[in-house]
Image 1 (cartoon, one colour):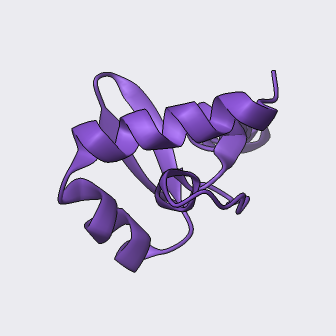
Image 2 (image 1 turned 30 degrees about the vertical axis):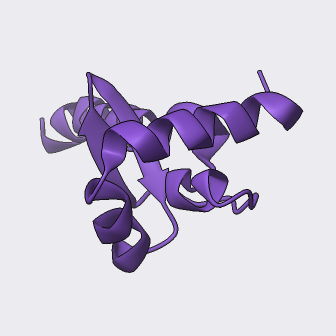
Length: 86
């Protein structure tokens, strides 16, 4: 019985961990994009803004970004569109 319960629990954990790693901008750090730099992340540091998940290289980048998210999000989006990934 325990093995039967473990498999669905493991599948659920993998599903949620995969979903957590699917941030906007292809998991590039939103703060770095706003500064014109391409830095990939594992999305372990993230924030939900307007219903979307944005990834950050570290907590300092997230903190800085959250000081003015509207302006920085526009800058990040503009830069990301110059090289964008689907």
